Image (tube, rainbow over all chains, first blue to last red; front, side):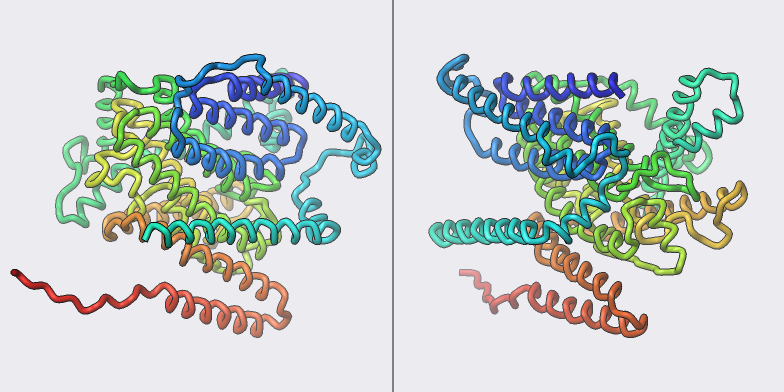
Length: 169
Length: 374
């Protein structure tokens, strides 16, 4: 368990580091995919197999592909142009935000809210059924709100695309 | 896997535990490699023979009796070929893509049960795992096309990615319908629940599976007449063979998942637990798998290739709505109480939508055109 954790963590961190340090954008995305798969492996390790599979299905199968598509539509894919800014203003502001986020997450994870949901020492088991029940029972309103939001976004994207088609004619 | 572990542990109590663990890991892996790669090798032969028959020619018939040793000859030939990497290629990605493309195809077999209790890993979320892992091949396709620094490769890769991402949606939705009907995500349990005789054939899933593994008539990513070889234009030797292998393995994996989800898996007359029942179950599973592969070959031999816009339109305008309608139908079927009523209502619901979708998707009648020679 521990050995697997450290190996997977090392791969995940390596992927994340490569994703922000490599110059070629496509290489960055490939490193990001490595990171996504590492996270999925962590979920599997924690017996959250549903989350793990969904992580692969959505992040590796869809989000990464979407990013790749977006990159193919941009210039300067190879990252050879432009100055390389290390330890600039952006870097410092970004790391400040990351630090704040890390502290908040640490508080949330160590706080009472999570331990109330999952009592310490609870036996690990498959989570798909519980997640499904929780989604359609306790969290149905937030779920539907997200569904409506996503549908609105989808329709909005179609409307914008239609506008452009009309202009080009 | 746990069962194999327990069995080995009981049989050989004096052997150290870690060796038993490793053996328990290696036996299913060896089974998957041995059986499915053999099927792959002979599928190539059968496909070439069948296509030859359909196209009124002989097909391979020189190596061994009836050309039965052709796969070995192909393998040897391809191993001896020179490995060419374009000078402008992105070396690392170019190397990694053919390796990556084989992995998802093989991973899917982990959750496909071949006999009662005989599945490499009985995941609680087996179906989801199979569907999720199957989509990873997109990344390998993209890497191959992009790393080759070739216009045709890149075009093929873009087509492949767009196609796989589009067809993923209806395929997963078709799978959702089965999950709803069976009430479980475990492949093993789904097969067992189908024992009642629900023949839940879903063309949606078969079509989606064909498209996801880029088989004819959805083989646009490597349309030879338009794109030379598509994403594997710049690959030669064993790397090219790996691409072929990945493609066939993915196709067979989709066939295996289809058999598991819709055709009752290993269920059949005489199947059951125990040695004899297990062997009969395996016979049924591999028989059905072979049938699906034969169907794939048949479709490839007889159907023309689609156009790109037809392909995408088909995914989004026909398959996706049908998949959604199918989900509602399964819900109705599940909750309406007297069985006959449920069947009638579900069939009616499906029929209405099939008519509606046909009407909506009917192409506009062409205007009357006149052709004049001036």
